[in-house]
Structures are given as structure tokens and as C-alpha cells.
Length: 298
Image (cartoon, rainbow, N blue to C red):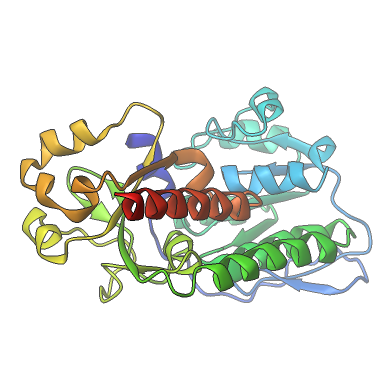
């Protein structure tokens, strides 16, 4: 779970309204930290310090501008061949400076305030994104496209159409779910996160919807008490129901376990707030309704 946990390290970046102006005359674009950018000519060299941003760059066919990314930027496969400048938490600043980037993309959930401050100290231009929900994913995608004078409206409209159809199809599901972040200690998905939206879009009620935290740590007894109908479990393929029960034997009496409603999902696909979010929603919707049909047939 170490790799997954890296993507969920939360921190607070300072609020600021620096105007990082490229001396262009284009439309003003405001990042998620309040920094203002204006462009008429797009940056030629960019660095991405988060896998979801790298995926957006490839989705927009901007990879020719990508000169650096992180060791976790592994999708699409070609992203593995880009110069690696760090692991999201620690970076080779000398290498980054040597790449002479016009713009660096970082995220609020994943990178650190210290990294941001260091880039500013070095005089590097940094665009900060914070896609904490589906609307945030669309904003980041749209912001990047605007920087490069690309119209992404049709792509986003297609996403909206798929999401809306799934919402309509899921309106009467009335099932509770637990979305596991890590098994030990037990961290699950709370409200106000893009991971929670997988549940709500698919008509599922998050058992942690009353938590004040985005990623609360629950005790094992509380899960038995809340007794979810489904468990969503991101995995690299090495997990199983048996593994879950070996950690929490009492969970064998949960409705989700008894009805074989533990849905294992691809960790990288589901935990990156990027252009594959809608693909993840579709996959979860299909698996949820497949599980529902199995229960009804029994």
C-alpha cells in the first residue's frame, strides 16, 4: 500500500495570488492556489510532478512538451521513458533546473508545500492543481488545455454525458459501501474527495459520509456496526477476500463478505484524479450492478 499512500498524503499549500505572468496577452487562467497566468504562446517545456497530470498531458496529445515527470508516472506506457526527476515527495532540483522547464505542474494532494516554496525560490513557474472531485478534474483538464490553446469542451461534454447516464441508472440502488484506502491501519474514504464520488455517482451510500475527515481511520468494530453492503478495494492484483478476513476475522459476518460483494478495482486507475476517472466510474457501475444481479439471483 506504500505507493497508494504516497498519492494520498495531504498537506496545505499557502494561499497566495502571485501573478506568474509569461508576458503574454492571452486569457487569464487561475490555478487552484489563486495564481494567475496569461498566455498567447504556450510553454514549450513542461514538467509533471503527479501521475494524474501526466495522464492529462498525454490525453491532450501534449507529450512532445513533457521533459520530466516522476517515477510514479507510468501511464500511458510511454510516460515511463520520460526523464525522472523525483518520487513526488523528494526531487532532484538540479536536474529539474537543467531541463529548463517553462512551467511545472504540481498537485495539492501528492506534492508538498516545501517543494512549491523551493521552486519559487529557484524562480521556476509553477501551476498548482487540486482536483478533489469530478468538477476539479474537469477544471484541471480544462486549465491545461487552455494553456496550450486546445478546446477540450467536446471531451468534457462526453464525460458529463456518461456520468449523467450512470447517475440516472443508479438512482434507486440504495446500497451502502465502504471504499478502503489501506487495510492496516484501516483508512477508508470519507466525503469531499473524488474517491467518494465513485460511490455517489454509482448510487452508493458511503458508510463514512458523516466523517469530518476526507480519509478517516476507523476501528474494526465500527465497520461491523455499520455493516456495508459492498466493499470497494483498490488493488494491484495481489489482494483477496481471504487476505481481508485474515486481518479482520470478524468481518466474515459483514453483508459484503457473506454476499461476496467485495469489488477489487485497479489501484492506479481509481486513485488518480485524471482523464480516466470516467472509465473508473463505468467499471465500478458495471461491477456494482453485476454484484447486485448475483445477489438477486440467489
